[in-house]
Structures are given as structure tokens and as C-alpha cells.
Image (cartoon, rainbow, N blue to C red; front, top):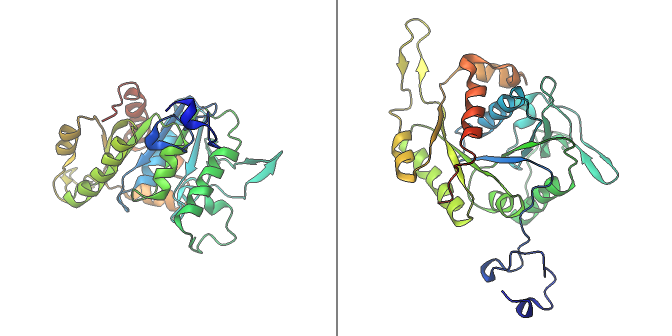
Length: 281
């Protein structure tokens, strides 16, 4: 778009100059070296758990990690990480609290609600404004790696994230059911539309392990991970088991302590190892 066509536009010089996205500001990344979103499109597949495990693994690798909980209507990151206490403001910047063990900084709507069980009944534009405020006005300090926990769906909230934040890519989370894969592919199509790279896929709740004989049970049916991976030409990051230990530690706000089979580390290494080759479909 020429400067002449931009004449008089309040966003002149701030957008990407593409007529199809006229008026949209450029996504920013602040001082972050890496910004990784975790999404699915599907609810109930464990996006927040994977986000928390990824953040824990990254922190144990030496990264200074933060999580932006973009799930405004169903936030769960503070509970999983045992983060308490309301953020406060210093010189107009929000100071996010940190997790007790690894110092993961967290910004979430649940931290500013008087009663975290009360619903957030807001229309899309207000949700989008809050996400932008969390991104623009939070002082992440020396955080170098940000994990963004996306909500279900492909509407206002994930759209706001992809338009406002310069993501290195999205880690997709699915479960074995074919129905889950169908909905997950909707978000994969969304990343293509928004020119956001796909880093890889995590299949959660892939199997359960018998505590007596070690046999793997495919509780939710056979995996469809390879089918999605081959169709979209993206790598598989991990297949995660159903493990009561994750639920117990998550409910206690101690998911940072989860170390079985070095799952947090394997997720973090898989994600970081695929960042440079992440594909824009």
C-alpha cells in the first residue's frame, strides 16, 4: 500500500501496509527471544497442562520463563503452578507474580478476580482488549521466553494473540480421538491464514500404563498423531500418557515438581529443537 493511500489513516506507519490487514498494528515481541503459543482449538485436551509442563521444562533448561494465560474465560495456569497474589502496578506497568519453585512469571485474569470461581462473562472485543493489555502493559522483566496459553476455539482471543504478539510459532495439542483431530485441524488452518508457523504437535492422554505389568492401554482409542503429522508435514513433539501424578500435582499447584520420564524436559527440547524449522503452511 502506498503512502498516498495511507494518507490520513491514524495507523499510518504502524501496520504492515497490506490492504487486506489495513488498520491492524504490527505484532510485537518486546524483549523476548522466544514466544511460543500452545493451542488446539479443542477444549479439554490439556493445553494448559502442556503449557505448564513446557514452561517448567524450559525453566529447568535455564530459560527465564513467563506464561501469558490468554484463556480469559477458563484460566487455569495460576492453579497449576501454585501462583497466588494479585499483580500490582509500578510506574504504570503490571508486575506479574512468580511460581514458587522455578520463578515462572504468570499473568492471568484469575489473579485479578476477587473470587476465581466466578465466571468472566464478557463479549469478544473486551476479551481481546484485556489480552492486549496483559501483553502491552505487563513488565516481564528479564523474561526471555514467553509461553502463551491459548483458549479453545478460533475466534477473538486466539485471533488477538496472533495479531498482537509476534509468535515464533504454535505448538498444537491433540488427543487420540478422531474428533479431537478434526477440531485441532481448524486451528492449524487458522495458523496458515495468519501466517504463523507450526512448531509441532503434542498428543496428550495417548495411553495409560498398567501399574502392574507396564502394558500400554489406548484408553481413548488408537493414535491419529501420525496421520495429522504426515498430512500437515509437521513434527511430532511428544506423546504424553494419562498419569495420575500430573493431576495430583496440578491440583496441589505443584506441577513444577513433575519429573516422570523427564516429560517436561522432553517437551521443551522438542519445541526448542524445532523452532528454526517451524513451518508457515
